[in-house]
Each structure stands twice: as C-alpha cells, then as structure tokens.
Image 1 (cartoon, rainbow, N blue to C red):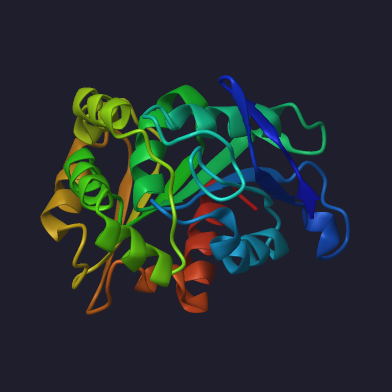
Image 2 (cartoon, one colour):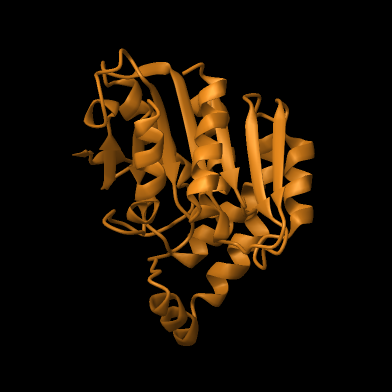
Length: 246
C-alpha cells in the first residue's frame, strides 16, 4: 500500500495505491482501477473493496475527492478533474497497464465517473447507486444547515463545499448529457429501496449511455447497502475482470 498524493488543479489530492504484489506473486502490468467515493465520504471507507480488487489482480488507486477526507480544498464543482488526475497517475506508473484502466464509483462518485469517463478513456466502469445533478444539489443544499451537518457527522460523514460554484457546475453538467459520450462497458448497480437515488434516474442513465450496459437491481437495500457487502464487492470485481481479461 502506498500513499500517492495527486496534483489536481491548484492543490493535491490524497490517495492510496494498492498493488497486487502486496497480495501474492508479482503480476506483469496489472490493469488499473480508480475508486471514487460518495458525497461526505472518504477513500478509507472503501478499503475492503480495494483489497478484494487488488487480490484479484488490479492495481487500485482510491482517492479522496476535493473537499473530502485528507484532500485539501473545497468541493467546488469540477471533481471529474480529480478522476482524470488519478488516471494520469496510473498511466504514468510503469508497473501498471494504462490501456486497461477501469473505474468504480459510488453515488457522487458515480456522477463524476460519468463526467470523466470519455476523457479518461476507461476500459470499463462500475457505478453503484449513481447520483445525478439534481440529487446532489438537493443533498448539498440540505447539508448547509447545522442540523444536517451534525446528522452527517453522526454518520461519520463530512465535506467542505463551496456551494455557489458547486451549484453552477451541477446545473451546467447534466449526467445524461455526459452519458452519451461514454462508450465503454458500464455496470449499473442499484438497490430497489434506495431512498436517495430513485430507480427511474438510474434507468434513464442506462438508456443514455452509448456503450454496452449491464444493470443489477437488488431487492430491498438502501443507498449504502451495496457498498458494504463482500458478495457485491466480489461480483463487481469479477465483472470488471471480465472486461479487461484478467
């Protein structure tokens, strides 16, 4: 495991790089996998998924988006650039096959993954309960209240956001517009009882994507349940592995 600060815009992002050699015999040029978290979260909450993916042969780079975790700055809109910085970091590493670069994003990380996918030239992407701009804007505006800040803190969530800039970015970057540019295979995962992202929004995203789409809809569950299941972690890793022929 390596700490890997990433230059993005005028500041650096905190990130952790997991290499397959830490979990077994050295692998020749493993594919890369970027992991993006949801609003208010941080990379450490996805450590279990990262470890499982690494054990299966991926070089995994988990990032803290701007305004989150150990990264500096505020969430001010264009966090898709954080993903692009992560992609550049992996492609510059001679130990990693930059032509087989994947992404796995949750909620807000799903939104920014769609925005970044075409420019990052991902080989495949797995998006868990991906939020759209309306869901994010509504959630961020609620998070401005003292009560909501405390509620987030009680759940171990925290973010630093510059709301005016974030609002303008969300309004000018609809997820469905960006989805038309995404041609790599995409896996969409959703919990039917997700109380944050409506199923109809994810179905609309599936229709808008230009490349092959697989969709897994799990009965019950909630907005975070798919992110804490070893069963789902391994299923997602198997799907990603099939796309890059591990």
